[in-house]
Image (cartoon, rainbow, N blue to C red):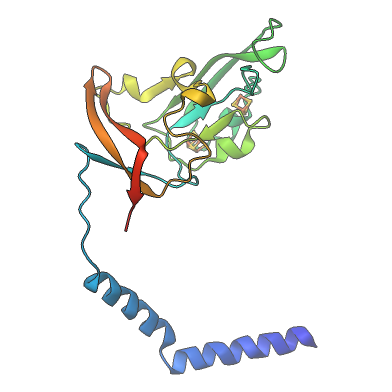
Length: 196
Ligand code: SF4
Ligand code: SF4
């Protein structure tokens, strides 16, 4: 009975919205707001850099636990769940305490040219070893350097450029760095301002 009433109300609500062009007016007010707001120029890449929100999906990171052990157990679930098959995992036995289990990844690499940043690999990972991070400057001088290996991705938490607890959604002061590997803009997270 209640369900029917709720459905009835929502039908009535939808009808009123249609008659009064509520959605159209909402859309137009948003457009008008943008037209009247102050324009904002980001001095990227020389002086400033956009730091994305936590939910951003950029380059992968492989993580360690607080004791510094590798969280990846080489189970290959990330590779199996990847729709573009751009992850390669080769597992191996290792009882030296390097990882959280006696199995670690001997090879873990991802081809970022084929990746579509869907995060299915992150969802499939049982140990939270794999995360899509907030690094988005992925341009480099050859296709080879778009294949990122374990050495590059297994960054200790304290050395990550943008710490996980950092909220993001801000513009940071930054400096441009051009190396053999490509162009990177290094942000100073202690000097941030709101985007708008
Ligand atoms: S983000 Fe998607 S496409 Fe990219 S490696 Fe993960 S599962 Fe594959
Ligand atoms: S990153 Fe996660 S899902 Fe992929 S092999 Fe390692 S533990 Fe398994």
